[in-house]
Structures are given as C-alpha cells and as structure tokens.
Length: 176
Image (cartoon, rainbow, N blue to C red):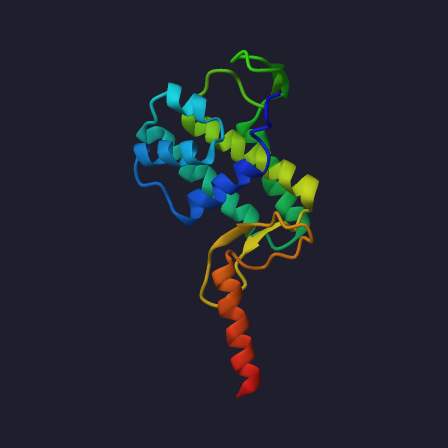
C-alpha cells in the first residue's frame, strides 16, 4: 500500500516551512526529509537555490490562502495554486511500491514538487476537513499559522503553549 503524500503531511510541511523558513537548499532538503513527504524523490535530486526560491513563492501564495477573508476568496486562491502547480491526476507505480495518484509530471524540480504537494494537500485538507481548517494563532502577538487536524475542528492556536498562554491571560483579566 502506498500512502497518499498529498494529505495532511503536505499541509504540515507548509506550516513547518512558514514557521521555520528554510534558508538554504540543504535546509529545504532536510525539512522535506523530516516530513517524509516524497522524501525519496528529494533524496534523488539536488535541491538548488532555484528550488528554494520556488518554494518561497508557493509559500507566499499559501499564506494568502491562510489569510483569506472569506471562503470564496480562499477557494479561489487554492484553485489558482492548483492551476499553477498541478496537472491532471494519474495513476503511477514509478517506484514499484504500489499504485498511487500523482498530480504532477514524473520529473519536476524539487521546488515544483513541493509546490504541487502543498497546493494539492491544501485542497484535499480543506475539502476533506473543512474550509476553515487553516488559520493564524489566536494569541495576541503570535502570527504563526496552524493546520487544524483536530477531531472537533475548533483549533485556534498554533501550539499548546500559545493556548495555555492565552488561557492564563484571559484568567488574569477576569481576576483583575
């Protein structure tokens, strides 16, 4: 069985790359390896400065999706990313490890590969979990992003630390 690389892992890779930007091709390769998303393909290719630049462009587009003011704008922005980075879906068994879907040509640079994964993963995340399941942390002063993978769909914070900090702030405000 081949796991779908376009799901939550791709969205979490985007969160990781936005929260802790890669500053070099080697760092981008390391982050892709850590995420496990298509890590075999990243290992097979040299990550270049052009790949790093391409990923930065895709992440800027992804942040526009996060910051969209309404659902239709969010959908339009995701659709624009899909049109730019993906191609018709097709079945492949390129590695001999099982049939699975690809939304890109076989041989693309790492930058395009990551952009395809992020755009497709985001579309699947929003369609499958809910259009509001991406956002920015609700803690004052924290601008980090999150992908809501919770069962209830009510995540508002980037981390438990920010949730706790905000709860303490609210408690102190009530006690004053």
